Length: 420
Image (tube, helix red, strand yellow):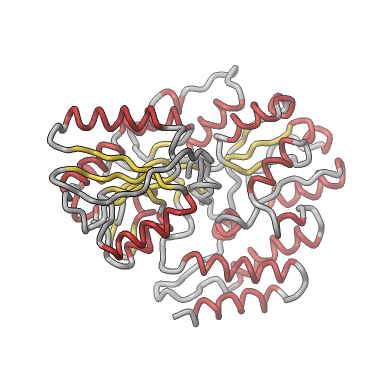
């Protein structure tokens, strides 16, 4: 999640930092009470933070040695799946719920629900805790989190005669038409390189799967969600790049003054200030856009402990240390992310706001205020990546007029149900 698009993910991303230096070769040999800890693309940006964290942990636990190994985002899924299959997995791993689900399906991860006491589990936001649940198993501990906000161009809004940022998808559709008619600019660009479009459909009330695991989206709510995107596309009030480009394109267009809104993580305000200071000066921030059900989307990163670890107790102890309130707060400050720790989120860094607060501070405070109700809207289920692909492929065909909405959504449901 660290930006949701390279992380989370959603998003990811998402989720995330775009920071990747010279990588070490992941080594999973565990000797004595030494644990191997893998992260996803945190070098070199967070070298100092991680070195300090490991030092603090080993000072408190001198009998445990920790080796930190950073793995590029693009390589992590293959490396962790291979290491688990070969019996050479590290002891603690930084993943996201989607990657971790593939290991949980193989019963390869420690069940934190059985391992931790209730009071330990209660330290994390309940909805974020659930993002690591597959069936009756909780396969990881939440680490850092992101919730989107709406960054908008005040000047374009004024030119279009729009008084405030839209807060619902219904208002977003109306604003999109008004902005295009009055300014010739597009309102926003949600892209299909991550989970944002699918998350928006869930927010609109579209159910994904039934209790039997079969497609539940071929219904009135699902068709309405499909129609929302098809209609905006056919009215030409969202860019055609939705079919081909990623979140980076949306950021570029906003920074160029070609988009009136950027639906993204609060950390992007910092990038806008750096890359487009003139646009940053006329930018403001509002809450995440929601649908009738009021659901707020979150992206999350976690830490998991492979059950093959030779030092399970030490590995769980380190995972808890990494995600405790103190360390989550300090990491949130250096990474410009949100904590999954309830206590850490109460810090004034996330709650203090004054009339003089700039847009970057405002974005952080608004984003953090959404944590209590935010949830990962696309649940960690087997083959979730294929579910998203089926829906996106069919949605694109409907946008292009190659299929009716009814046929597109029925085809996506059939593909999922016959996947086996």
